[in-house]
Length: 278
Image (cartoon, rainbow, N blue to C red; front, side):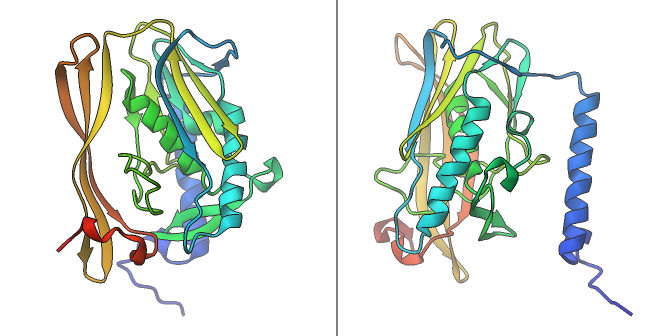
């Protein structure tokens, strides 16, 4: 006779139960999308729209103590493959962007390799690891635009030491096929375009539109610090999105978008000592 802790969720009993639960959630999302009235963006054009709404570039390869370099290059490979599924996407007024509807299921057969993924709050190797970095880059574009985020999931914003000056929302967007999606909707009267491409070790991203807008956006991070809780360290901060008038730079709105409380997933020795709160 087999006994298990009745307080455990079904998905936590064993790997088989987890796989069953995951497939159930995937099928549930497929059914939800079949019933929805949402129109999902699916058209492409490599001829770029004239106005740059926001842009972002980042280094895909982190070289630091305790970081597996092979998994970093695998991450870059995975991001490049997914970029090819998204580059040039047109998002018309009223359309919704879905990360997984466009990227599709991640498999070795498609060329994806093992990179770092978060599983049960631990960093492990998994096929397609690093794709979250791409989702996070798209999130950075969207929060600097008038587009409306409709689905956003977070994970740790402290996966690796900061490289140079701290960038708010430099990590923390979680995606997992297909029930943990990243989605936004074009609620404006303009068409937008997503441009994503890799050059060497750099991921480049642009969000474009037909014409400019009379305002712009910036991220403001307040009370950023690290704090020890029990035997673990966590990154704390409050991240706001501020809307400003383009001509006068007057602040029009400031909204809290993330009360950040992220477990540090890298070597604690690499936490800047002057950022640790006693």
